[in-house]
Length: 190
Image 1: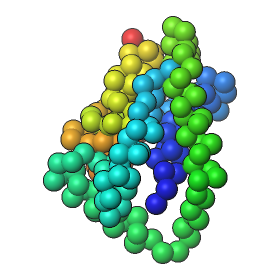
Image 2: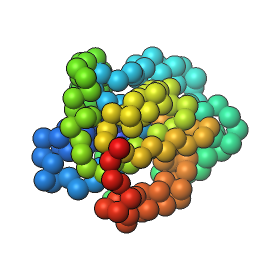
Image 3: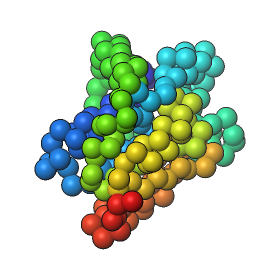
């Protein structure tokens, strides 16, 4: 498995932030999972290198999940679910895609956003979901996004890493449904 899955998930969060600011009429609500703000803290390359060095049966286990037995058990269940789908799967795109994506993420995090202007410009209701022990994009990023955005709700999942939404899929879906069903009434700004 390549780094592509982790990188694509983060790029989605980065692109969602930009779309919410640059095209606000196209974005009614925003869900950001496992991402960082512009200028946010990231340890992408170090964590990925460490994960590959562990020689796990699937690199997603050390990359997305904490070392606890409960988190690793959830990780193994996630890997089994991912492998169960045999038809209509996306092809692995490899290093020619993951390399530029990694550079884009590192550039996003390296470029400071004076006064958190991007986040402060997001007025849409936002749900920020993050692993409480995400080593790739530390949970401090999620908290900082929550504090800077006007209409944000933050959920940190316990004993979880970058793959929090994979570790707690039912809970994640329930939180998203609650947010999407009630976003127009539960968010009134700060």
